[in-house]
Length: 216
Image (cartoon, rainbow, N blue to C red; front, top):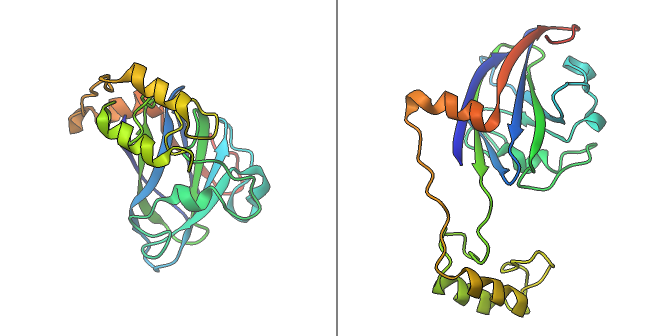
């Protein structure tokens, strides 16, 4: 599926809501903070909610119990530029959390700063359906996957092709039947078509609302 980029600005009473849709059979493997500029070198807030409607509140009234996860964003540090925000968000305090990659469905992000106007960009990394028997995730079912299976057999679930929680003979049979197959080639869009690809895959839209008003 590849990566898709969203850029915007928020703060001082303006809030950004980003709606995105993950197609069935795909998953969001990472949400990387590509850039972040804050004139006072402070931190901002990003929250993840399920669905297309934002019900968790805005500003200081955000209720973490109504979120799937949240994180601070900054220029540096564990949630700074270059960080995968999905990692911290998945285990954020006072939220139910979620498994990574983020499963197919409809989601909304809130990006806000209670004081300063900040600019940011976020890179969404999507992964398509997995290929049965491709234990090393290189897009081809071949002898190298058999070697991986041998190392995992009876030890862990890293070569679990049938999702039963272990690596066993049944997974070998799946590899054997799939031997020689490969994942379909997906063309990388040119920069001019990236937005169209992003809308088609992630269906993202950004809109802004004033403080203590419902966004519209």
